[in-house]
Length: 482
Image 1 (tube, rainbow, N blue to C red):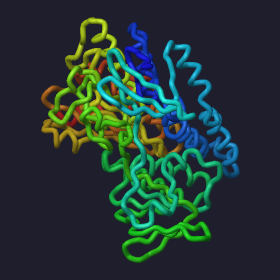
Image 2: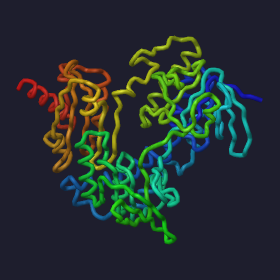
Image 3: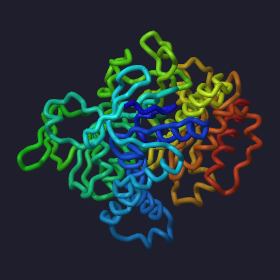
């Protein structure tokens, strides 16, 4: 017997849940298929547990930068309490609450592993081995996410390395930790574990946070080193071995051996598409699923599959590997599936209801290091590469009155990249304590293409860190008239 639904979503993480929810709100029936925990990577092994691990250290350091408060801050972090708090945010890796939400939203749930058997057809093998045949009347969406990439380093796979999952779900803290990589996961976990008292070594082939403005990675590198982290730029392991004593020995190019209790690999991501049976529908396993802006999966010819029935949202489409952007895609995807299924108008022009236009040049991101890095839109080098005629405006956030009140000796930097032809903001990067709270205003300015002349009338309250907006505009004006 084959069970039918209007929409079937493979993957019940945050993104898949949102696709199904929007489709149900649009009048369709929807089924979520999940092989692990409902709520997915973000809820249990990424966004939530990582930020729960980072916050206590951040709060402590913030207090230590305010005279009168710093005198009251004594002792080290209570690591056991930090981990217990982290467990609360992951619901102890129990998804009952998420399951209840799914059912309350009118979405069906089937646990098991799904594989394609044909167009709009799936086979799901449940935890008990029971096989269910499924058919989608309208569409299937793949929201299976991504998994950690293990570099081809001799001995690495056999050394039982940590990935981001083990780093965020650990129930004890190693005395020594080596981190391979220089991206967001590497920088954040170096920050967290250093605050726990772990001796941390970071091996980064290139500079930290290389996709951000140069000053961002430089500030994070300085801060990590001040926290006692051994940041080695231009270094990588040539061999790894875990001995019988449990110690991991990482050999560098010059023969140096670094011993650690654990080794975390944070060197990139791979799509979870290897075991979905993509070959049965004319696609290649283990590949990212390329999509158009309505999230329809494209075949090798660059066109949607015949019948326009297959969609992909979140990490698996490799557009933007961020949960909030995946949810944005999910809303567009669920809505457009419902619109197409019911014959309602489809708004697929740029910035329409049914497209993920913001994925291209308007993506906000926060790296929760110390200091945090908050950015949206194009960096100065990305804008130049894209062919824009730009003007780059920099300002030290510590000069702003609100920043000086916020913490003693506030250190931070802001950069605004302006499209000189249209006089609108293309990108903004903030580095400094609590700058993540400035990001939505920057995102609105970029997505709304608000002219600089109009931004002058968006008056920041005094004294707040948001005053940096006024200083950026003033600096732009002074430079323009020089």
